[in-house]
Amino acid sequence: MPYVNIRVLSYNEPRRGGETLQIIGGRIYIDNTMISDPWGYFDEKGEPDFIAAVENFGPVVVPEASPFVMGDNRNHSEDSRFWGFLPLNNVLGKSFIIYFSWDREAENLSGKVRWSRIGKLIH
Image (tube, rainbow, N blue to C red; front, side, top):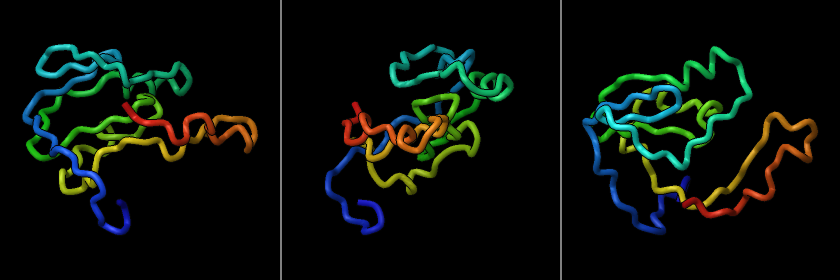
Protein backbone atom coordinates (compact mmCIF):
# COMPACT_ATOMS: atom_id res chain seq x y z
CA MET A 1 0.00 0.00 0.00
CA PRO A 2 1.41 3.39 -0.92
CA TYR A 3 2.54 5.75 1.83
CA VAL A 4 2.51 3.07 4.56
CA ASN A 5 4.90 0.63 2.82
CA ILE A 6 2.83 -2.45 3.61
CA ARG A 7 2.59 -5.21 1.01
CA VAL A 8 -0.97 -6.54 0.85
CA LEU A 9 -0.63 -8.81 -2.17
CA SER A 10 2.52 -10.28 -3.63
CA TYR A 11 3.42 -9.82 -7.28
CA ASN A 12 6.05 -11.14 -9.65
CA GLU A 13 9.01 -8.96 -10.55
CA PRO A 14 9.17 -7.98 -14.24
CA ARG A 15 11.45 -10.45 -16.03
CA ARG A 16 12.06 -9.14 -19.52
CA GLY A 17 14.79 -6.71 -20.49
CA GLY A 18 17.49 -5.87 -23.01
CA GLU A 19 15.01 -5.73 -25.86
CA THR A 20 14.93 -3.09 -28.56
CA LEU A 21 11.68 -1.14 -28.50
CA GLN A 22 10.31 1.10 -31.23
CA ILE A 23 6.93 2.70 -31.93
CA ILE A 24 6.05 3.32 -35.57
CA GLY A 25 2.70 4.84 -36.45
CA GLY A 26 1.33 3.97 -33.02
CA ARG A 27 2.33 0.29 -33.35
CA ILE A 28 4.77 -1.18 -30.83
CA TYR A 29 7.69 -3.27 -32.05
CA ILE A 30 9.91 -5.34 -29.78
CA ASP A 31 13.04 -6.66 -31.46
CA ASN A 32 11.55 -5.67 -34.84
CA THR A 33 8.37 -7.72 -34.26
CA MET A 34 5.04 -5.92 -33.91
CA ILE A 35 3.24 -6.93 -30.71
CA SER A 36 -0.46 -7.09 -30.00
CA ASP A 37 -1.47 -4.02 -28.00
CA PRO A 38 -5.09 -4.37 -26.85
CA TRP A 39 -4.54 -1.83 -24.03
CA GLY A 40 -3.37 1.13 -26.09
CA TYR A 41 -5.69 3.81 -27.40
CA PHE A 42 -4.73 6.69 -29.68
CA ASP A 43 -7.22 9.54 -29.55
CA GLU A 44 -7.60 11.66 -32.68
CA LYS A 45 -7.81 14.82 -30.57
CA GLY A 46 -4.73 16.83 -29.76
CA GLU A 47 -1.98 18.83 -31.38
CA PRO A 48 -0.80 17.18 -34.63
CA ASP A 49 2.89 17.67 -33.81
CA PHE A 50 2.46 16.13 -30.35
CA ILE A 51 0.48 13.18 -31.73
CA ALA A 52 3.14 12.53 -34.38
CA ALA A 53 5.84 12.64 -31.68
CA VAL A 54 4.17 10.01 -29.46
CA GLU A 55 3.12 7.73 -32.32
CA ASN A 56 6.75 7.40 -33.40
CA PHE A 57 9.51 6.67 -30.90
CA GLY A 58 12.87 4.92 -30.74
CA PRO A 59 14.44 2.58 -31.33
CA VAL A 60 15.78 2.26 -27.78
CA VAL A 61 17.31 -0.67 -25.91
CA VAL A 62 15.49 -1.35 -22.65
CA PRO A 63 18.06 -1.84 -19.87
CA GLU A 64 17.78 -4.64 -17.32
CA ALA A 65 15.81 -3.70 -14.17
CA SER A 66 14.45 -0.53 -15.81
CA PRO A 67 10.99 -1.00 -17.33
CA PHE A 68 9.68 1.12 -20.18
CA VAL A 69 6.16 2.13 -19.17
CA MET A 70 3.33 3.61 -21.23
CA GLY A 71 -0.09 4.94 -20.33
CA ASP A 72 -3.08 3.31 -22.03
CA ASN A 73 -4.33 6.61 -23.47
CA ARG A 74 -1.23 6.81 -25.65
CA ASN A 75 -1.33 10.38 -26.96
CA HIS A 76 -2.39 11.86 -23.62
CA SER A 77 0.21 10.08 -21.48
CA GLU A 78 3.56 11.53 -20.56
CA ASP A 79 5.38 8.30 -19.85
CA SER A 80 8.72 6.65 -20.64
CA ARG A 81 8.63 8.22 -24.10
CA PHE A 82 9.18 11.54 -22.30
CA TRP A 83 11.04 10.84 -19.05
CA GLY A 84 12.87 7.61 -19.82
CA PHE A 85 13.03 4.24 -18.14
CA LEU A 86 11.61 3.56 -14.68
CA PRO A 87 14.07 2.23 -12.08
CA LEU A 88 12.66 -1.10 -10.89
CA ASN A 89 13.07 -0.09 -7.24
CA ASN A 90 10.45 2.63 -7.90
CA VAL A 91 7.84 -0.04 -8.73
CA LEU A 92 5.75 -0.55 -5.61
CA GLY A 93 3.27 -3.08 -6.96
CA LYS A 94 1.02 -4.10 -9.79
CA SER A 95 -2.01 -1.98 -10.61
CA PHE A 96 -5.27 -3.86 -10.29
CA ILE A 97 -8.01 -1.23 -9.89
CA ILE A 98 -8.88 2.19 -11.32
CA TYR A 99 -9.17 4.40 -8.27
CA PHE A 100 -9.82 7.67 -10.11
CA SER A 101 -10.46 8.81 -13.68
CA TRP A 102 -10.49 12.42 -14.87
CA ASP A 103 -11.57 13.95 -18.19
CA ARG A 104 -9.76 17.28 -18.37
CA GLU A 105 -11.58 18.19 -21.61
CA ALA A 106 -15.10 17.94 -20.15
CA GLU A 107 -17.01 21.19 -20.34
CA ASN A 108 -18.21 21.32 -16.73
CA LEU A 109 -16.97 20.13 -13.35
CA SER A 110 -19.59 17.41 -12.96
CA GLY A 111 -18.51 15.83 -16.25
CA LYS A 112 -14.79 15.83 -15.43
CA VAL A 113 -14.93 12.84 -13.09
CA ARG A 114 -15.46 9.60 -15.02
CA TRP A 115 -17.64 7.96 -12.38
CA SER A 116 -18.28 4.84 -14.47
CA ARG A 117 -14.54 3.96 -14.47
CA ILE A 118 -13.86 4.36 -10.75
CA GLY A 119 -13.47 1.00 -9.01
CA LYS A 120 -13.15 -1.01 -12.25
CA LEU A 121 -10.63 -3.84 -12.22
CA ILE A 122 -7.66 -3.57 -14.56
CA HIS A 123 -7.26 -6.67 -16.76
